Image (cartoon, rainbow, N blue to C red; front, side):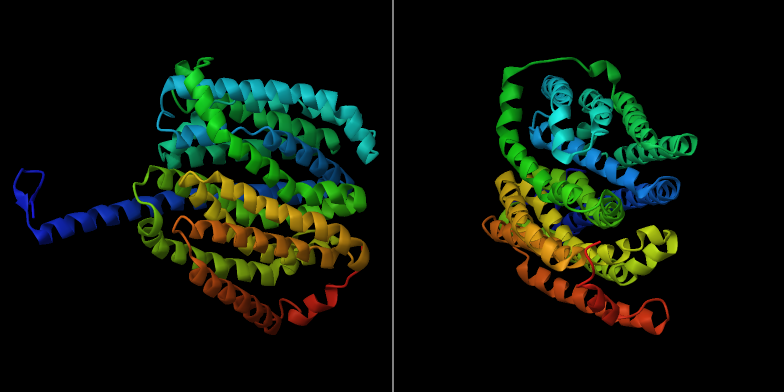
Length: 477
């Protein structure tokens, strides 16, 4: 067996080689944990700002205004996701992503996409306003449309930092952007407690970070480029990203689009409160998957069972913490809503408890998403989101009119479970199955919910599991 030389040129013994490998492994793990710490800490700070903004706006503005803005934001997000060709993902995944010719071509594609979306938003204003029977959208949608130009012009620097795993810099930038947006939104709501506070807050809160993004890297490196090879690479990788984003949008937002026509707009605003908090948990893991797992797996030389063995311990530790925290959140969700919102929003308490149970399967699916993207298999992500969409599209219209809002929300728990099951099946094909680990963790999570709820009842904080069962067949509104 050949001997390996150390830094000094002298051959290393077997013990020395083992120690060297151990130091590299521990160093890599410490680096990953440190990056995860930055992602988690700044995300918690961002969500704290979001909570403050959410509560203040709920006190300053009527539920109907929040419901209207929820619909506008859903339509805006839909436009962005329905035209997603994987610009950012291509920069992270492609070996040439760091080269100016590649990322400037990707940026040029992004700008063109923004201009097209702006034109489409103006053209579709009248049909959308008529579809929902809301004449106010005739003014509001054109007012919001410039946001597509702003997001299109945003520098590709964020994706370059993601590719380079410069997590600290990116996390601090996102925190500063969230702080700026929150300050603008609340300031405008105090000055003019109307729908225009939300509209102008969205535009200004997007424009500031878009301009600042150019200084994350050397701003002089930005150029409009159209390299044919780079265009082909972006579109080749982006075809599955496009399909996945299309299905993802419909799967994640079918409820908002359906509820906007099926329930009172004020109740939609109340539901939006619950959905905002439920999404927060999943967003944290989406962020960790996007900033850590996806680029790390993309850069790794390991695949299949070797990659599975490397990931298993830290994945288990992360999900144990997530299961414990989320189970406690489910147990206290209604009490939390009652504490910080007035009685107009109290229905969001039970909504939130149900949606958080679905968030557990959303977490498992989100981590699987990042792994599948990292190994270059975005097709599995698209198929899993398609399965989730099918469940929601069929079950929600059946359950809502017959059994009411509370029972209908269990559709989302089932849909996220189906999405995860599809991804788990696809992951087996690439040697990344964690079925036994996930089954044990899911049982642990469900048992903890029951224990935490009963314990908080004994402490006088909640009403126990029985109060949930009494609400399942609650009224429609």
